[in-house]
Image (cartoon, rainbow, N blue to C red; front, side, top):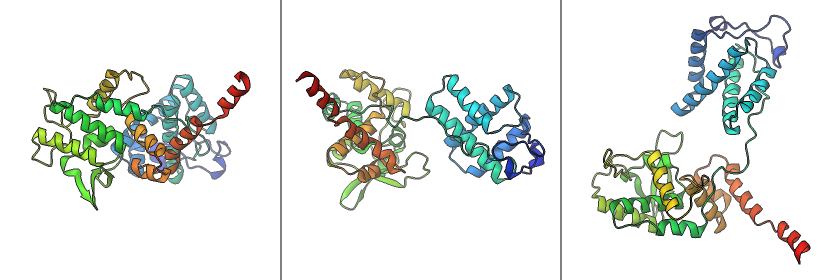
Length: 328
């Protein structure tokens, strides 16, 4: 797609930071031009459907901001102002981060195509907290969660096996949903579950399934009379979707209900807390950060090290030292 097709004049590198020397750059806000531009941009990023959807929402917000403010020559200052506008409108910092990332990627593309300079190159996104938004369960709380489940029914056997799997392997809800009975296999001398992770198209990773958890899963599959290995590993028991694949929403609801049944009714305790629990308890019991990174399949070790950092902070004796100085 040529620059003139979308109504953008060629740029000079000297205009990188928004200088208007020479001809003023203009960015067409015509609907058909924007659609064509976005279509070409999506082909370049070659991302998953979810990522494309996120970029679409984010960039439409950006172009709406330009239209509402009659801006057809955005500069680096425009991006800064847009970031502050997002914050002022009540957007969470994670949302601000996602929106700015989309803008940065877009202008990286326009610069690469010699369509418009990369005005967002040095703009930072949101101020993301180094702590996680969800809490984890202590070992005693996790035990109470599992012990509270009545395993006399097929539904109870399923919930126990599912929660035990999530608490020990740190699976995401989407990974639980995608799992089939056939994905429970053997690798070396261990039983493993092949996993289709977030953003993956294939089940190209695996987690080791502890013996106790495997026994619970096998007991559930036997009670369910699961003879077809292409069936979901965990199936719905609702009348509308009986024996069908569960949804992430239904799993989140089940986990939340079980938590509430034993008095763990906090907005910071959700199905995702089981993933934090697996990471934290493994570190507390001697696992190395690199081992936990492999368990959770984090791309970046820094994400895993947040858990270790929080554990170290919780052990900090400084406040006790102050207490001894003040009250002893």
